[in-house]
Image 1 (cartoon, chains in turn blue, yellow):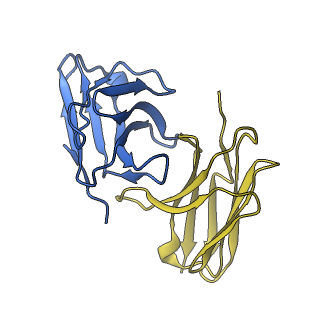
Image 2 (cartoon, one colour):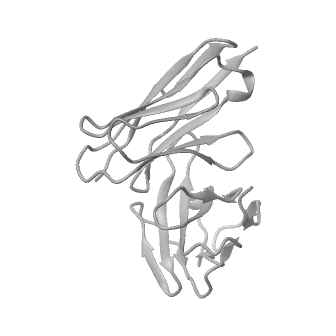
Length: 111
Length: 106
């Protein structure tokens, strides 16, 4: 079983609030990823990191930001949440560009 | 922009039926194709990593083939069981297809 964790699992929050979605892995993987998925749609890569202090934007534009200060931790922050940010956010990690191990996801609802 | 297409979008079969679905991807600059299985209320789990043209991988009743020259991969499930019900995702270069959702009726 993969050792990758996301908190919170569910979050309902009002417009304008700042939120941070946590993602941690204990496998020592260098590469970590954030995906966004709307119901019935594809997983879209919004951020990735190939190591500490390295972050890149994915193919889907996102108003969120990420940081990678420690290998095991890859939090995603929304400075001012909006209803359009309502979605599921999945974190994953991998060795090289091998198979990814996914966390359980965070379902975010912005009212 | 890379495009990964999966078909069909959903599939309903009876227990015991064999089934297959398709993932198509750009045939240029191929590195690897991944298949994942995503059960409801769980995380996606890796099934196969396909790297060589003509590759065939097998895990129990599930197998996959790869054609990098024409840009497609097939996933086969032999003798489907209700526990096979899930969404099957393929991914090429961090781009995911929309998935094929399989429902197996007992």
